[in-house]
Amino acid sequence: MTEAPANRAPEIVTIPCRTDNYAFLVLDPEGTGAALVDAPEANPIAAELERRGRRLTDILITHHHGDHVAGVEALRADGVRVIGARRDAHRLPALDEAVEPGDTFTLFGHAVHVMEASGHTMGHVAYHLPNAHAVFTGDSLMAMGCGRLFEGDAETMWHTLCGLAALPPETIVCSGHEYTEANCRFAETVDAGNPALEARIHAVKARRAAGQPTVPSQLAEELAANPFLRAREPDMKEKLGMAGAEDAEVFAEIRRRKDAF
Image (cartoon, rainbow, N blue to C red; front, side, top):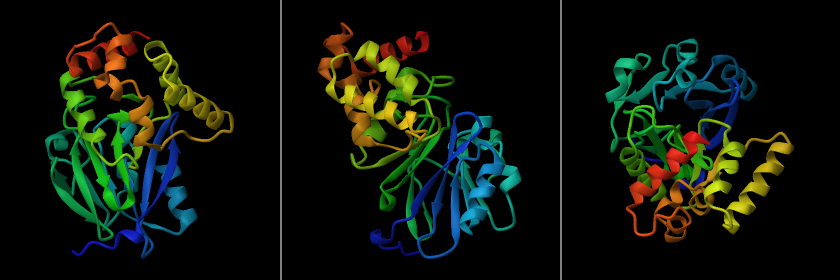
């Protein structure tokens, strides 16, 4: 299938679900279809589809946790393609298409690149849509944070974050939860004096005070202020008393401190 021109990029719609989850719709720029990334619950998603007069065509799953897949079966209908990681197929809703990191498929003529995102869980994947300048990261890279290491280790998650950090800085990071304020409070304890962090805290507080989501965020913002992505930076290592340490070791220490925060 020929890819659509980049100037007709799909629109992305953020849908709050459950207590603090987000789902995302990717809208066909040339028709009435819509693809869904993660399905925390069905009702808000179905309501948004109806409000926009859109027909669900695809469901993309990042990982197996219930707060990302609980709504899949209620939203599944004839012609809806459910896509998820081959390595995780044994614990995901039934898949119509099983994918692996490095694979590419299309949505509405636009390329979707499957990226490795293990760490929070093993088999977690992310979906990069270059034409939409967006990446859907589930619970791997998050706004001002990263997911807990429930199944993977620090080295695995650090590998994931390095891959995501290498995307163009204008990439919009569509992550799975509204944890940003709490993540900012932790970041202050390990990265005090970072002007980018101070600006981010101010912006996040303003958005939350206005009842607005802080997700998606821009990768450039995460590179500048997210302490987990800054594990490779010399000034961050010095603040932690780890000058000269390997990047993955520094990441592991930041994750350890966040777990105890």
